[in-house]
Image: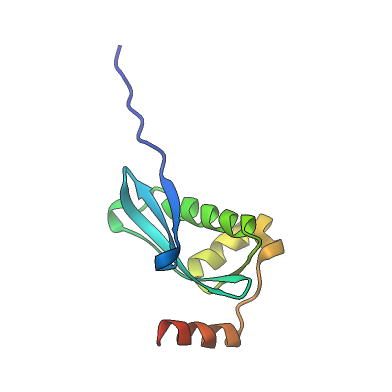
Length: 115
């Protein structure tokens, strides 16, 4: 009889000091989704998964956990990040807490990021 070892499930954590959620695989950061908070809205502007972890569905796991956390905190979502916007089109369960991306939000975000 052979033993099957299963890899531990990825872990998502919010890192407020760095304004992002990270996904960890075997304790190593495999990806992140970055945000800035504006009043009661969490503005997501960038999502990435390291090349070594590509194709494993980690971005979806990460973003779903992040959006679930936003809901639990009573905040709203603004999807400037193209990946988060695409995810939201497929996951309508977050539509009730999603606000549109406006030119004003983009200008504010640019100021926050110094661009």
